[in-house]
Image 1 (tube, one colour):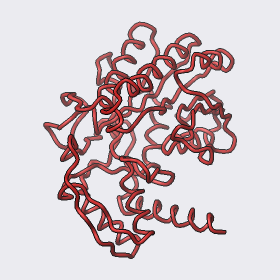
Image 2: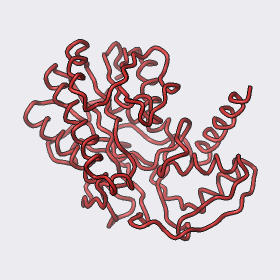
Image 3: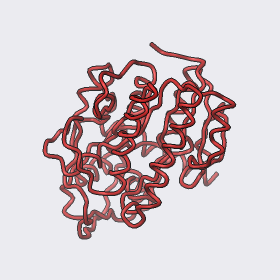
Image 4: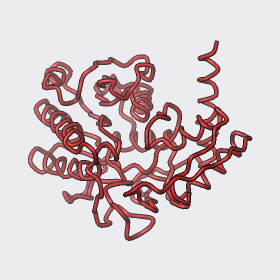
Length: 322
């Protein structure tokens, strides 16, 4: 079932993934509000038709917004997402990722919001996985403050479900890529490689390049958000009862990713290797069978997604020089 005419709040909606999600809600006929402090999001990403409020999700004033609008659905993407930043400043990481979530959840409960979608992370909540592909029921042993806050966020929402009956869905993303991804962070290797290829620069690879990740295209992630928004996803009250991995199920090494991008760009770049980064997972691939059983499946191959991403960056550059 596809709902419409809901009042939807998308936090972090000026960011890479959430801006695409906001567009999808608008396309469904929902009224969309975006809250973003623009610390990493960009105003240019905010879709036409959305109401934008520049605000930190920790701001107590956000409760006034909830009282005014009375949101039916909240999609909570706003977060501190840099693993290394979480290690260097775990207090700031917890402030944004936990206090921000709690501020939103408290406001949602007060006005009777029906459901809250929470973006968790399949790349960090499991730590070094004992099983690949990794299912939702695998042991949770996060190795960074960022992973700890994501897992704690899920636990808090389980509390709000148990005590207040507020439905939630936690989407544990793998490595999402696509248009609007920031090439200036640690997580956007696809955007970083695309930019370096266009600049004729060498590709920097940490370690031997054999470490694998599960890359999923942003349009497929949007489809998972729409399913979670429209369907009854919950059974039971355990930690994993409302958690769903969202990934391709295919592990791709950094070297394979570089090869694929060179094919898409029809270019060859030199490569340099630096020591592997301390604490980096060697392998991470998600088992997304659970959400697939509910009707979602990735529709883009890696190279199809890479081509759309690369073409988007090329067009962006062309517009910038006009």
